[in-house]
Length: 163
Image (cartoon, rainbow, N blue to C red; front, top):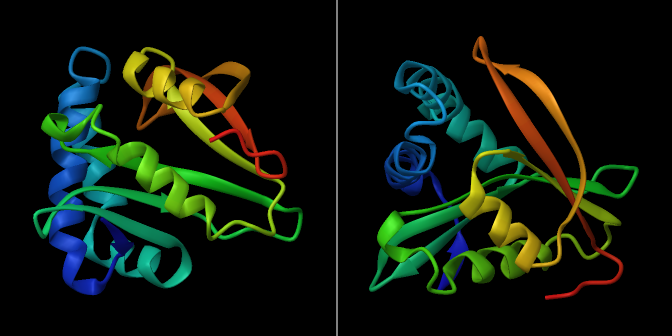
């Protein structure tokens, strides 16, 4: 089941973010860099702001949160961004990611495109986005919390869905 996130879900979202990041980025992004990013991006005040200004959805399994997705609302140009889509490792490749994505797309019906940025070495994430209809548009280097990363930008055409 997928449902909208609430203030009461903040601790669960924080836990899922830390667990999934540590699993996904082990050996790719140094632990101190991960911690710095997660501490800032998933602080309680930041999560409260996300819940007010963006779309936060939770994937539930037996009434327990096991994943979440965070989308920006469609802007005046018709663009939206998938800020995060994270699942606890034991629930990956079970359809929850696709459910989160499909639920998020239902909030973006008046949009034209959805972008997502993925660390280039995140092969699990890249395979998921490619399998769900996202197209690679560019790769570039960027500094992330002072650490040089290679980032891939994907775009999903909201006008001609392929899910």
